[in-house]
Amino acid sequence: MQKLTRHQHVTFKLGRLIALAETAACFARAAAPGKYPDSVRFDAGVYKALSRVYAREATLTLAVEGLALVLGASDNSSGLADSMNMPAVQEAQKGLIADMDLAAAGLKTTFKAK
Image (cartoon, rainbow, N blue to C red; front, top):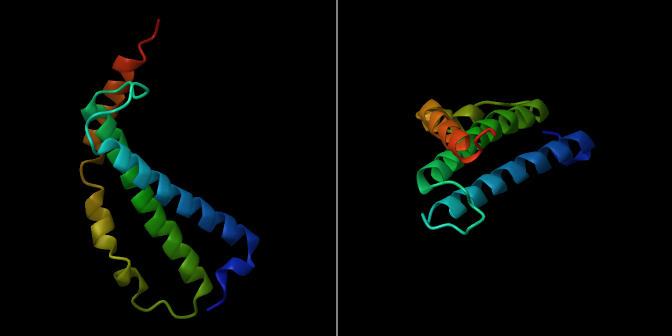
């Protein structure tokens, strides 16, 4: 296996994936309590739905792009996809469209056209 960080473009991609994971975690922590600062203009249900949509996207992106980077640097990929628990990543996508619809309705209500 080659050392991934020897390639600058890979280092940037890893940084992007790390930032994606960290922002998803921060958003989830911020949405969890149910009571929000005045800067949050959405009700709790919409805010939590927005967080879940972002978390699902982050999960899928991290799994697929992270796996692609590792497989691209490896000569032996046996069992790597299984260790990533891709079925759990797929299962986490359930409910995405319903949450996106809830988020869209909340955005329309909050940011009405004038």
